[in-house]
Length: 500
Image (cartoon, rainbow, N blue to C red; front, side, top):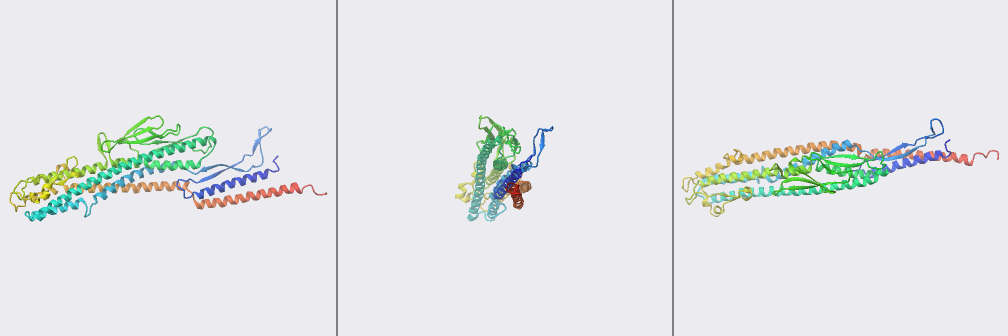
């Protein structure tokens, strides 16, 4: 038989359950703008009315016993998380490429009145003036100074490009530290979760922190996340311990091992010219080392983008965009200076002597060391404008001006102008493609993020609706308790008084 006070207990449980739901709703509202927060809900559970009995069936059903707050659960979709992290890695990769390429565009600054093309046009123009007045001291001085202008522009480009490449190496080193820091933090959160779940706890706030860190790590490299149940007696809705594996790395690498709590930390290794040689992962527990060659590392993310821009070793060769463009600048400087010197040596100066080298440079770094022969700077009369030895002849000046448009074998049978224009054109195409991929990746990530937000984010309208719903349920439960109280008062204080 049901207890006389059964109704009070049912109402009390209802009050407690609705109150918990109100508290959870308030928690959601409070964290509506908290980064990484996942909305939570109370899972109401009907209390079973089945009890043991001496009847044949062994059980019997009583009147309903009310409700209880079974658990407080995060609303999260792991499949959407996986999609988001994949797109996040792609976006990080293309953003690093686009940022580096923009720096190259800013340095070359073409087309403009300050770029190398303009400086070379001015040098060409000074030779045109020399052709008109081969004996004019002013025209000769201008040629020497315009030549210095070309050399200075190439020196600046070479220095600036190498400086940006040094900055990329620094960014890679910072990325290494950040990546290792996030890996350690994920492992620490894992350990906290591992200590709580076996006792039936559901640490939602720790799950949120872990997911936030996993999102951050996914922008650095492409990762795969799997989950294992904790030991002991975890709740059915417990999410378990995360194991993080690096994808597309050539060799399998477990960054965070959820089972034994070990981590593999990254060290980027370089050759003597700061090209990435290997990526070495060291197990912090037993010292086991996993080495991945830079050319085998295909895991899309910010780290791969930085490595490709900075430069890396591929089968003994050095590749990478900055390596390529610095090499092209040096090749162009060397081929142009060599061709110009050859023509200049074939002419005669105002003194009637054979021409000397107009440009000088170190073959190990032509663009970085190119300069005009100091002897010519000091005495412009040594510029070999004549072809037949007469002071008024301009034949060699004409030939010098033709060097700009002469097809050179070292430049792939392109002229100096054509080669440089081709470099600028290729840079524009590559940069445009990188920016297009950033836009596409950002759009795809935004779409996935919107899907995730529709599932996991706090909707203030929905929470306000829930608040009103739970408030009404709480009021109704309170009214139910009042009704039962009045009923008991009638039974206890008023029944059996008739006839007294």
